[in-house]
Image (cartoon, rainbow, N blue to C red):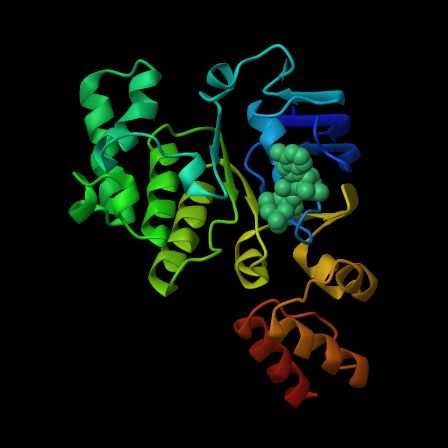
Length: 277
Ligand SMILES: Nc1ncnc2c1ncn2[C@@H]1O[C@H](COP(=O)(O)OP(=O)(O)OP(=O)(O)O)[C@@H](O)[C@H]1O
Ligand SMILES: [Mg+2]
């Protein structure tokens, strides 16, 4: 299978920047993978993923998306395949109403008006935006504005869906929508990249995690492997979900806990195995 994203020795230095934001990173992402990107504030997560839609161009190295080098391409040329939901929705949204915001992407793809309307309807239903359609995006709360950002990318059905901190600043209800969205994208066969500080979200939804520290890619493995790696976790100042920490502690103490649990369900089955022994 051809990777949908291929990164070769990517380095990025901002023109005004004092630091190398991304250092000599190489990686491949296959179609259908659900990948988390983690690391401390300023470790280069946003810088890395913005290259996948051409918002940033490599200082050196290459980024190949869908077989094409992104260096000479404009964002609009990549946007049919890749959607990026900004960390800050204020940098993304520009239309005067939520309805126009949702319709802009598919209209720009030259889809027939019927299809544009159908996609807007579907997004409104999925993200529960019924009451907001005629409002200015800046008149609605931050969590809902972020959902509008996701919905306006969802209407384009990109093959690669990039979410930058989708649950940061979200309340319980909008967080649940983010979980439902990622699961839906997975079921639809999309490739998903999710930058997040929310380890519980990642434990539940991703197959693979990229760990960044000071611009370096220091680990590329399953959430179970990443969360079990004490050195990696402490050097990035990130903490696994509490249930995983509990499971790691028990495993140190009792041989019977041989698997690391990522969820309460997995913990329960470990405890059951333990009590049967
Ligand atoms: N527009 C910019 N100009 C100059 N330097 C920048 C710019 N954007 C980011 N940087 C710097 O590049 C480095 C990586 O930043 P980046 O935003 O990619 O990190 P991040 O991992 O997404 O952080 P956060 O968790 O805070 O979103 C940081 O040192 C940051 O200060
Ligand atoms: Mg960021």
